[in-house]
Length: 101
Length: 216
Image (cartoon, rainbow over all chains, first blue to last red; front, side):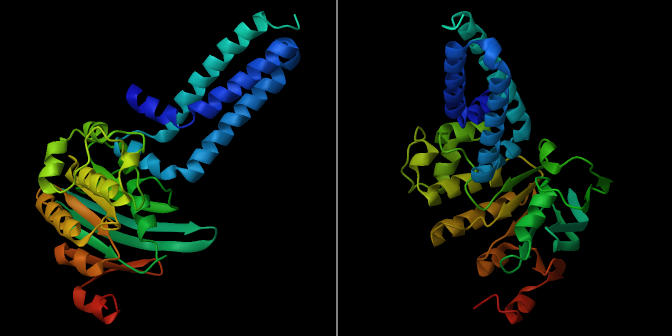
């Protein structure tokens, strides 16, 4: 299951991490309390956009997971949660070192 | 012997009726073929059976027991070869075989002319080579039933012949639901033939398909 999750994650890890870095840069520049609401919404929406892009353009690869009795939507939820956890940790660490403090 | 029956399948997309009250059956030891022109709902029917597309209505029975779960969720029951490539391109050939608990040596026994390495990534292979690997993995997997949606597309005639041999050999262990536009090739190995037209499915035979112009 972890191997499958890794294969699934690989498909949108790069855009997602890039977006997390952009969010962290915004937090670093403008401080967490001023931007937190907008950034969380942006991050959540960007992940949904990645999900729909994958579903639209690479849905055929979903059959790899179906053939192994795994629902790709379940993998997406795990990926989403992991990505948000990473985002939360990085956002917190960045806010501790924000230049706007 | 296992019998898979699907009936009362009704499916429409944006108001257009694709399938209406469809019945289809397959069982261990039989290759059941679905023949129809483009856009008649063959792939949709297979996806509905597999459980990846939601129909307005469907009823699935395995050995006369109703199944409430989508079939793909039931381990060891059924697998599916879609029309287009489904294996992730970043996967190595060996890894793909490992996921399906199979040995690459079995594959190269059937196809010794293929010279790619098992360490190659699937993205490095041609469309035909990838299709052949995918078809082989799905056909040889340890499931009770297998759905093949255009298994012969992209393949050269000699590989089609070998794939037909593999399917015919594997039917001892499982039931097949197959569709392909190479009607002559697929009818060669079929035990039951269904014809789909405007969302309705009925049992047919080679003579009737010939009259309908499927063998030009």
